[in-house]
Length: 325
Image (cartoon, rainbow, N blue to C red; front, top):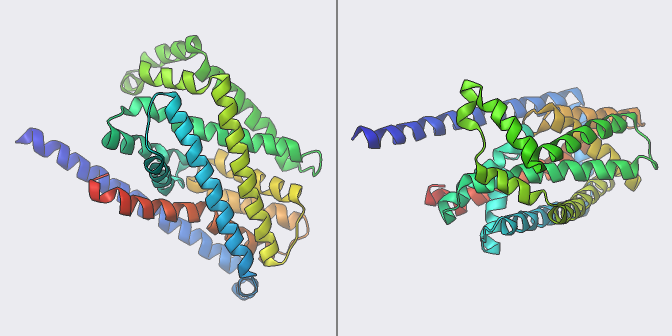
């Protein structure tokens, strides 16, 4: 009897802790946006919001959705390469369910996808966990690539700093994960630390990492990621138009990706505060009024990360919760 009750009580405690943490994050996010609204001058902010061209917002949401769907295809390609075959519809649902935790430090809350795949298809977590890390790797690689491309056309010192930081992260991460010898050496050293023994990756996890970092798969992942991020950047471009400002393509891409990058390296859930703050700062320093910059950034964040999060919650609720996922 005790053997049965213990796991149940543990699960309940974990769910309660998760609910409390999620609630706290939501409160903090709401507090930030309310504060930003007040600082930006409520009357001016609402004036800009009321004068938005709605037809362009429809285009924005369609582009963002297209970008997310493309990334779900990327997930399926990665899964197939590690011999995990999941129907296209299920793969798409699982990817979107993971988006409900995209606003977590580094976006690693999306590791919940491995739990869903294990329960639904019986695949071990250690086999699929690397996919979330590889997806984040390709997101960083794509942002780095696009920033390098835009720098010659529109120089921004903030972007130059990010290019240097991301270059070190990308190079170091690839060398560590793709080199079996280096990875095993690091794991051997970490295993000597008492509390690290239980969380040292398994051979199965290492093998998935090695397969997913092979040149051919890396090129596929990078190409798909570039396409999806360009589409999202166009969504940002149309957001500027919706508010009444036609910013150049290269500047749109650069400003957006630079602020996203600063939010990512902050490791704050969803980059909240850092992403918005850096984006507004860049716009203001380039001639935008603070209220206009705040309006544009708020809309961009609502139609990208928070739109994706809402879709993720909806998919999780209607596709998985009734099955105890």
